[in-house]
Amino acid sequence: MTTYILRHGPTDHSRRYLVNGDPAKPIHLNEDGRRALAKGWNSLPLHSVRTWVASEFPRAQQTANLLMGVPGPELIIAPQLNELDYGEFEGNPFLQYAGWLDGHGPDERPPGGTESQSEGIHRMLTGVLAALEHPGPRVLVAHGLLVSVLLWHRARTSGQNMPLFFPEAPYVDPVAIRDEELPGFIGTLMNDLETGGRGRATDTDDCRRIFRNGNGSAIATVDSAFPSHPQDQKDLPHA
Image: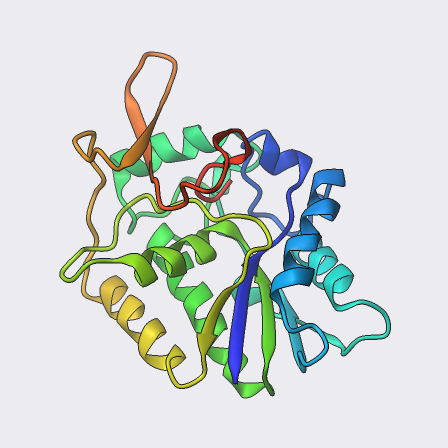
């Protein structure tokens, strides 16, 4: 069997590069988000999916419900798949959080936040593993950071440390992982987190796009892992 993990469809919030780690905020798909679901209809085995799982966020649940159709199996809500808690950066541009993250590192919690980036990724990976308790094939609708981490790991080179900033995740484009592969896939990433196997992106990496703040300082780099994804449709890694 296979687990399909995908990012929700676009929202007005994400198109403006504003972060949302609070599931109580009523942020839903915009028209582009609804149109983006065609990608999922074409890439998921919709008629054979036995389990649908989504985070607590409205945009994730809306994406799952629209993909599964009516009638469909009961949607399982998994808080472990929630977006990162951005603390005091909630609702602000991603670059503000990225600047703070660049200075403080992945293991420190942002002001007002309940988890660090490393803790949040660990939580999300635990949620992916927990999905194996449900019958497959299964679809997990989550958020950009989780999908970015999975895509980075799939493309990583031998000995490469987990970076501070990850390749951005396309919307509604599933990462498919076979059941027999999933525990080892997730286990390696968890080991990176637990042993401190984290690296920092630098301005000298030619393959990365560099995002800068108003004074020109580089504060976020995004790996150019998806050349087929038009630049004007790109989003920041986990906005």
